[in-house]
Image (tube, rainbow, N blue to C red):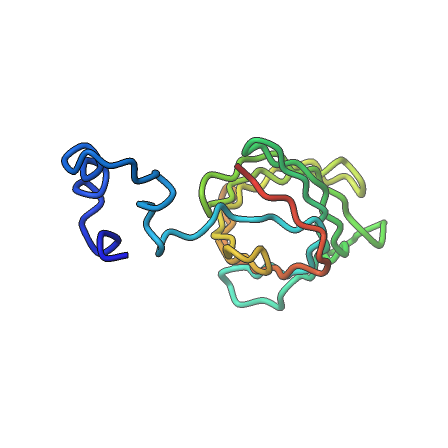
Length: 154
């Protein structure tokens, strides 16, 4: 279809100019990817900017209308830990491919701080990479989907 190579603005007005009933779907940009999908189960690791060893985690996510919630489990690696694992709740948003969320530890092992995360999720829902920040600390993280249970996010 030759009109697909036209600029988007011209494609929008072309049917009116020609007086034909070309559907919006026919004029859609074929290079625009579909809305992202978000996997339910993830495995990943986060690292401190100080180049310490990465900390592995598992993450469960659910999304509806751009609102994301979930839970993270990670080993308790800080000095003097009294429990083997830490748990945190996730609350955030997915806008386009940008996933932004707050991870708030649930008090297990005395940990209650919150950490801000911002990442880019791949359109196929198989991976994400990003940065995390909290007062006086920051670093990077990445995660990969471990299941095929995806939720398409409008």
